[in-house]
Length: 169
Image (tube, rainbow, N blue to C red):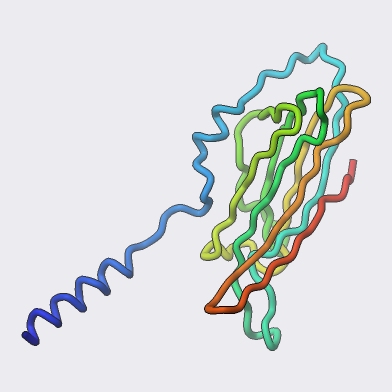
């Protein structure tokens, strides 16, 4: 009986300690379905936006942090025009690039939303992580909206807050 319980306990521990290799819940293959070719002769307006994201927040003191799941929402708020996102680059607290989410421009159809999920266990961004987005829209079309929703739940407590991008160019 003791041997069976010990084997069961060891099995549970081994399964529970399996290393997680995925750093984003969005499969990169999803972006390839959105790749777009932009004709250089098209009249498109260029823009750049900054979005603050929090992979962690301080809790109780500067020596204790709490991990968060972050959802980055890329929204086309136009009812008629497709917008193009050229770059979605994630940076850590110190301004070092962590990753680019796609290798070529993607499209967002009218009123379409795409998401980037940064898992709670992915804390490389730290307390001051951020994104830079580069995008193009047809002339006189509204610019895309980029928002962050950070949340965490433990037991019966939850915490959630949002951030909104600021156009920088």
